Image (cartoon, rainbow over all chains, first blue to last red; front, side, top):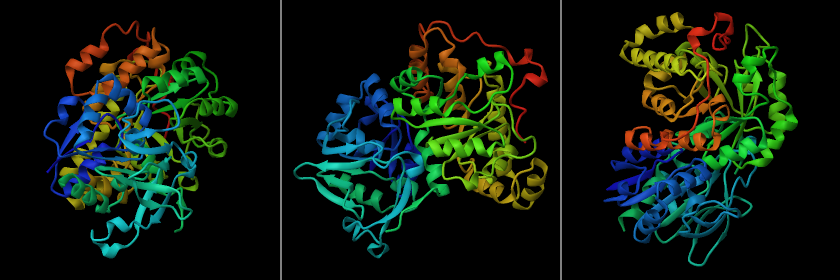
Length: 193
Length: 295
């Protein structure tokens, strides 16, 4: 299994370490040619405006969209914004996943938080299906999902923080910052099929 | 489902999101927009860039909260602001207006010549400067969630940034070759908290994100620091004291991402207009050096 991590800006090294601990070959993707021979791609946390600007300047937008036609892609936080079709403001988006996201939905850094989430989709990935410790940093919310998008996790008040549409996965939080690899293994299953 | 805010993981986490990025000094909302459009991962809001603080002399303090708030309103990326070393009330004010990160900075005139701020008491994360591993780990011991090597701010001369990055990274390499029983004596020698020194030895890197700062003025300077092994760069006077700030800012962002690709570095370095004039660090007297502030 060979997974790419979009390495334009953000915490791509944290994803890389997590994937390598699962025995996966990891390729840092900075140019379109790095997308060859990959089984899937993770778009990390970071600043979505920075990632979008660099992806545009280095002609990655169309190659990433083409890659998404038949490969698994997972976006965490900024990556989820970049994967979406609408971020409620003007910035470069891949327009691949039918979700609308609101950036910085919880406020500024002093409002960043950790919490436990119930994620039924992680049943079967061990740890007796216990809650997933989720880290939200200046996090977005998935405000709206289109048809065929499965909601994987919400906050207690019902606001959506994880979703899947076919081979696309979006999380508003950062599984790569915790020691818990269940979401990474869940994504690897998606990339296999 | 209880929600916890202000943990060390959350504080460290925002710095992890800034990795591979450029944090730019800005003095107006217009500058902040230029920085965001150029791809900055965050901005540092301040009244005067270090080159001007250096030229003007006098006491340099926290900026007017009004000016910082205007910058916060003008961009969607994180906004940092500086307080004086040891001035915990300036830090309280910056936390109250909601800045995303506080830089307890030697660029401003120190308020305490013995102690830094107890950063554990705050929900907002802090970044602090260092010249070596001992200083970095003392700041982390006080609660800093991000470190930047100091360099010499406001000079446009990268030599001190290189010296401090080599010092920190070299000391970590030395630490890793030591037997565990030698670590306590080394902690004493460099004035570092023992537990954090052990943690650094285990990780093979600082336990928090480590950017370079102070004197970075060109895309090549940024890539140099990245190749030396830092996680990202601060650019202060280097952008808005240059001939074409927007163009230079975008070029430094690209160089920080593609720091290992010399052909891209060549491409982005073309036709940037004049860099900041700068001042060589070797021409400064000891009292003019900002990096020596911090204890």
